[in-house]
Image (cartoon, rainbow, N blue to C red; front, side, top):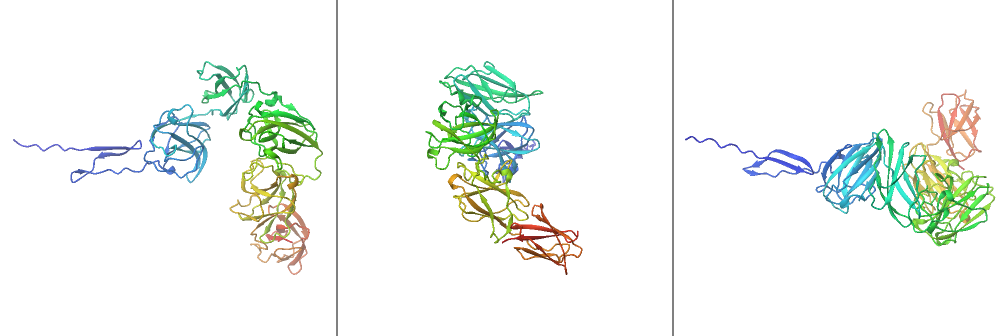
Length: 619
């Protein structure tokens, strides 16, 4: 009987790693023995390998074999290996969630920018409605922007998860805060929707949505904020809030947001719209234990983080001083606003005043005749207690510095290095405290400041020299603009030249000089120096040149065309300074510059051919 050949036996190996098929095919053998298949690294272990995810997607992932990520924290710390996803934003909001879909304590972080320069958007560790310390994060997104998602863990934990992504063109309410009294609660939130309606549903703690009391209205007209009335004192409650943008676009529901009504009534002036009147010479008693927390802008050092009481004053054109200095049982703050309760605009603010015990406060500010000012007395970092608020009025100082406000910053000329012999004279005597937020190097102090501006020109390295001529304890910060004052550098207790590096070229920057005011205020000098190319001949006519470098009183020009009649002088920002007559003899002329302030200038002849020459004045 013939023997048939044995059928070939083929083994197929399918390997799954981190939720993805990494090998499918014949199992490799060598000399009849199976060979190991090396697992590749996790494909999306690095930001540059981020896997795409889109609205409506649900993907599985594992961080078990991932490596640690050397990126900055964003909403949470980065404490465990993670893996990356990426998506393109839309106009609206995006929710990323591992809620009840992970076997370890997850964290979600979202960035924009690029993998080499990540910019934090938001992060979440433990979502309150999710079991097992899983996460859910909603972020506002812009169309066309690339976002990067890092799924990682708490305190080194790794494991398996499912990540779901959902999107809506109607962003959910953000920063929901409830400020309850005994029978009322004020609900604050931030809306990103320009139009539409809102719904707030509230009830006893644990109530089922759809069975509570509903308050609704039109965004921007009826809220936020929204007042809930008819509540019972001393009751644990919850609320939910969402917005309807129309056209079938409805935001995610935010909640439950828990709060407890108070047992006792609050003070009448706990509410902004019931602010208590205060006048010149008054001293009023209050206790913020009977106040309410009100979200409000940060004025100077006075960010709002505690309950407070409201006062109303009407300006008379005089200077007003409001003070709790040595008159409070807690660490006070005073914020002063113009505008209305629904549109507060900072006028002044103070946290800790110079010479005031117990971190109490004092602020002096100018008032407009007939202008209403809302005053909030509150505390540092949740502090509450009793206080006396005094108000004093006085005629305004006759010599308020012209550069007291950022918008009126005084020009600061740029001098060649080593020529700061006649610096700019300045003073903060009679200056007022600024309503702008304090710089990060001096976050709590009273800031009585003046402002200067300089142009970086064609060099990114400048040296600022600030020296006291009577002022005590000078500080200095550099900003980009007044509207959104982003600081670049910040220095306290300045007593030596400060070198600024890597500044943007040909850019106007601002210098803020301050101390605590009062007895510390006084005169000072300020000087900006840089490596300027002075006396440089022009490209078109190399013979045209200026000397000496620098010049004190008379500028000499050589290579002057015979038909040149006038010379115009400009500052480095191109602004005309003066025009002078030119009378050349043997291609030479001299120009008086004794009345020009120290600094660098541009000179242009009217012949249309000589180009521009730079020179510097220093005495």
